[in-house]
Length: 127
Image (tube, rainbow, N blue to C red; front, side, top):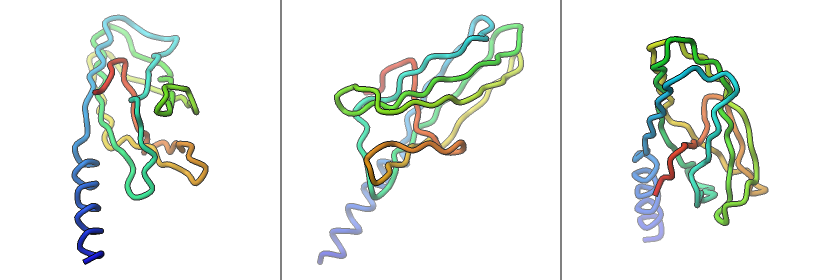
């Protein structure tokens, strides 16, 4: 019975993780100094499965987008507990999609970054 309950909980977590949210960031003019981003609030520090998110960047400007995206990790109170930068180079008229961006929670309850796996961040608030 305990195994059954464990697998039900695990299955529900998988559904939660697979339902990634998407953010669209439209750049209307060249950006060279950086894109400030705010990470999704109320992140849970899951020891079973990490949270995931997706986002897309469109470069509508006539110039190449060359920037560093600032990634801030907030705790449930909204305090910044970690930050990192993701370099972005995007030619004019092109689009880049970041899939399965995730953060892993370490044993000391801080979020760890890996280049292929981040948990994102958007200029918009996710509810």
